[in-house]
Amino acid sequence: MRNWPFFQLSITTPRLELRYPSPEDLDELGDRAAEGVHEVGVMPFLFPWSESAPAERSRSTIQYHFRQWGELSAAKWSLDFVVVFEGQVVGTQALSGEDFAVLREVQSGSWLGRRFQGMGIGTEMRTAVLHLAFEGLGAAYATTEAFEDNHSSLAVTKKLGYQEDGITLHKRQGKPVVTRNFRLPREDWSPVEGIEIHNLGPCLPLLGL
Image (cartoon, rainbow, N blue to C red; front, side):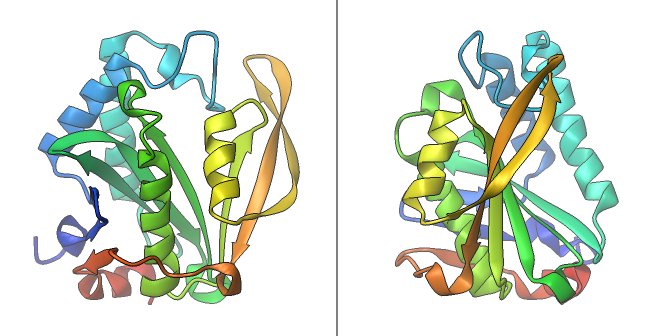
């Protein structure tokens, strides 16, 4: 689409492709959501969408991406990629910014189909969007957060060199919980070989750049 260049945007790593999803990609991502993204009794999300019935998880996943498309503006945007591994959509990785042209700060979030966890994919897909943030968009900071009991997300964050940046209290399923906040300055980031960004240029004006 000439007037919506994000459909051509992608990032490739040695094992993965992160791409702005087509409707067919979202259909497959919905299948991953229906299959499950975490163990029973664990809740890594503030809104417990992953506890709904499988068909509802599929629909809500697709609707979420549609909302992100419709609400994107230069002042506030979220690029929600599907992650493709060995020809399959296995999860989603987002990079978002608010007043980015001024603040130069991004935030990341993601989930990965449960049967694809424990393979290093989570680290590789986060590394890909950090490359987009720092090398492609000129970010000064990348931030992220995770609940204290989300050990896999915290492990990826520590591995990539983020610094502790305080805590935030939330209400999750009627109980108080703590998220740990992290910040990665540009000067602490080292580019990783083998990562390439494709077709970013036409997207920049829509991101306020």
